[in-house]
Structures are given as structure tokens and as C-alpha cells.
Image (spheres, rainbow, N blue to C red):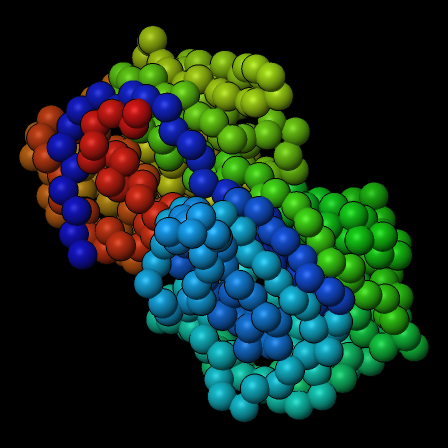
Length: 451
């Protein structure tokens, strides 16, 4: 599906959707726990739906509670696949107490890399083989390093040279593994599964390479909340996790997503508008809150306020943006949005130490260089980043060509924001990909005013 974005000023109040990273972690822990968990205000998106589908396949009972009532005033619930009622208010999860079901049919993780990597590790807790697959993008994302570590820890694994379809069969016997983590999801997967291994299984993990450290901090915060026993080096280069532990039922509200918040913030900045973003917690462990520091360093404003316990951040830009040098190693998902900032800034913007952006849904470095090149923005790829020669506030291209979203939700949203400052309408392909993490964003953007 293609979308057309017409240039206009983007202003208004935007309620930021829930965090994908938090939603998936909360769902998996609730599904593995004993008893009933309640997860409030979760993300309603394609990635979250993929995680729900996998959790159900592994044995969890999940009911979705929506913000509607029937004519008796009672809450109404519905299962995935029935008529959609919106907004999603809550997941009620009856967990499996660590006893993994082993379905015989392949489990489809859709476009969700987080779900795939986490589920591969959980499958090593079972006693029968479980096969996983995904969409065409997922089939191009290697899990080979993670699968090798699962094999070190006792699981039998088989794959298409490290790619899905991949099959994992436990039991998890523990021992030692060394794993390089250009994506933190490999390590988070091991950390979530290891405590549920048999009591005699002690898992030791050496981590000679780790990117995206804030996501490991997030995972460890979940383990700590569950009072899971583990040891780790201060720099996360070593972990020791005893087995024989368990997860308890949880009751928590999912915080808003800084990754998603970057896009309405970006839209306001490049279009000369003002966005008031609600629901974000500046104390959250999400690394992508760095985007707001980047905005201010480049000359925009990001003003935080707390009124009666509710946080808002007001984003606007009253002067020309300036380029700079930014290390995105901890926040590779911000690269597409940061590229657009660089394109509208004065001078060069260096986005560096972000080689991990090449192994996301797409090679985002190459894709952003290609699409910005169509708009006349000069870019130079680095092995671990990109250099963008900014336009000083205007995109050079007079008439926008068809922009390719490459089926990547963050590419689609970044290009849509860029289109707000063009001189005429822009057409972007694969617009439906935005629903992976931010359903309704393009409708919000096209509306012209976010109120």
C-alpha cells in the first residue's frame, strides 16, 4: 500500500503508544509465570500480536480486554482474529508455570525479531522440538549466533544456516557459552530463559561484544522485579544464572515508547510545528530517549514538564538545526529519524558506531542513503554509519520521486516525516509497515493537526 503525504505544519497533542520492548517482555514473563497476570495499556500492534500468538502456542491463555462495554455496562473481551475493538486496555494472562508446550506445527513470528529471538531461547526449555519461521524480512535476519549458544547450553538446534525456519529442542543443561551480541536481543533471550532451566543447570555467559546496552538494563530490571538470582559484571561482559527459579504473576502498566515518540517529535521539528507528547517517563531505561537529547543538541527544543504526576514533553524548533556527531550504538532504531534531522540541518551530521543498524528489518544505513539520495540529499555511507550533508532547512529535490519504504516500519515513518517539509506531495510505498509498532501514525500525520 502506498501513502501520499502533503506538506503541512504538524502540531498538536499526541498520546504516545506503549513500548514494544516492554510489552513483549511483560507478555513473555507473564506467560511463563504461575498464576494470572494483568498487563495494562499494552502496545496494540502487529509485533505485539505476533508475540501474543507465540505465547499462546507455548501454552499461555491470553485474553484481550478492550475499551468498550456491552449494553449491560460489562467489560467485553475478544480473542485475536475476532472483530477488533479498540483501544486495547489490558492483557489477562494465565501463565504456564515454566512448562513449555511444544506444538508440532511451525510457529510464525511475523515481522517481530524480538519475539523470534526470545522464543528460540524459550524453546530450549522444552522437551520436544519447536520450529519457528517468520515473514520475508525475518527470514533474512540471522539467528546463527544465538542458536550456537543454545547448542552450547544443551539444546539441539537445526536451521537454514542460521536463518529461519529454525528448530530448537531442549532440555537446557546449562554450562558455558560465549556470544557476541551485535543485537542485544540475543543476550536478553538467554537471560530470560536461563532462570527457568532445571535446578542443576547453571548458565555462564561471556559477552565479548554487546551493542544496545540500555535494552539489557531493561531486561535485568524485569529479572530484578521478579527477584531472580544472577551475577553479572558491571560492563555486562559476564553473567552467571542458576536454574531452578520461576516467574511470578505480574501486574503492571506498560510505559510509552520513546522509539515511537521520535516520529511525531521529528514531524513537528521539520514542519515548523509544535508537538506535545504525553505518556513518556523520562526515568525509563529505554535508550531511545537519547533522541530528545539529540534534538536539543541540534537546536530544537524539548521541554519536559510534570503536572500532577503526568509527564509531557513539548517539542518545537524556532531556529535552523545544526549538524553534529552522534554515537547511536545504544540506539540503532533511531537512525532513520536521525537521518531526517541531518537532512534538514545545516552542515554535516555524522551518525556513527551504529553498524548494528545494518542487521535490523533492513540495512537501514544503505536504505536511508538511497532514499535520501532520491531527494537530492548528499550522503556518504560508512562501514558503521552515515554522513549526511544537510540542506539548511530545505530538501533540494523540487519534485519528490516515489519513495520506497522497503517494508520497514521505521523507514516508512521517517520518510513520511521528511515529506512534511517538501515542496509538494510525496508518495511512499509499503505504508502498512508502520502498523508493526505505531498503528495510526500515518493517519495522524496526514490529518495535519494531532489534536
